[in-house]
Amino acid sequence: MNNYSEKFGEYVREGEKAAMALPNRGPMRFDRKGNVASEILEGYAKYGFYVLENFLSKRDLQDWQGDFDTMKANYPTASDAKLDLYGRPALGVNSKGPALFWARPLSDPLGGTQHSGGRYSVRMSEPLADESLPDEIVYMIMGPLRYSDALLRITGHPHLLAIAEAIFGDDFVPFNEALWIKEAGLGSATAWHQDGVTHWNHPQWDQDIHGMTFQVQLHGCSGENGLWVLPCSHIHGKIDIKQLVDEAGSDRIMGAVPYLCGPGDVVMHNRQLLHGSFANNSDKERVSLTFGFNRRSSILNVEAGLHNENAVYDEARILERSRMIGYAIDARRQHFPHETSYDYKPLSGLNDQVVWSETVRASLSNYNLLDLSI
Ligand SMILES: O=C(O)CCC(=O)C(=O)O
Image (tube, rainbow, N blue to C red; front, side, top):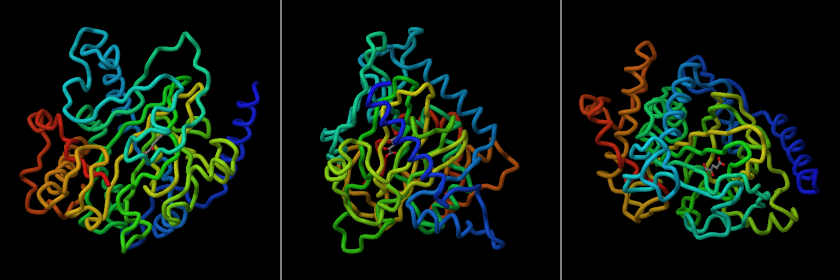
């Protein structure tokens, strides 16, 4: 074992121990009135994250795994290829907006670049990649709901939408979805960052102003391959990442803990929380779906464009993008007819226009051009 991996192993063990000692994890719970349990909301508010254990059903997970295998089989053979291994038009090649993101194995494609408003200020360490590894891998897919009904249905889960309502009010709005793929022994690092870029100097700045993502786990994750966060950092404004790295003497920021999850666990994650992940040099793949929501006032008439062209997010755009929530709810209702569906108030009265069908799926191939990122 070299010096780096020995130190990393120690950091992982300490971080995992600290993560398990925090009181912000447990199953989904409601109080007697049917509201999301206050322990969940309070744990999330205090630490900036909460792990909902054993959240997804076996069926959701099997459907997701099936769709993921189909997506992978349809990857382009290289980042500049148009066809997959079987000669078919490949996943994402006709997308007008962002779709597949590629990196060298075990590299950090974002650290130290101007990507997403320059929020990834420090490059992570990059373990030496063996010559036998492929030249490039897919590490992220944006707008993944167009490629997987199982993922669409997860985003329409009534309990997750109830949480979004409890935090942001019943007129909450969506922002984007991404699938993070950290293949065993190949997966790239995600440099430390805070997600929000728009409202740090807002006169009404608060800990929820940049919204929340759910990070849903297909296989689970550990300190070796999971996302790391600095607990409570969402309440301290913009953080000087370089300073924390200097203090630590490496990218192993002090006090950080990893998300520790089993298959189907969902992490509620405040977008202002400092977070990042190390290159996945472990023998376990991590696949995480992230999707999130915002308070309407954080988005309405705001000019931004983190993942796509700068634009003013007016009522019409918000309504159009919010239809994805309606489709997700309806797709879920059709697949799980015995589940009580979520009633999304901003689409009240439009229910007959948000019916999930093959025709609708075909019309959504560029839905993420309307993402509402801040
Ligand atoms: O899961 C990861 O490694 C990165 C996720 C992330 O940075 C995000 O969701 O903002």
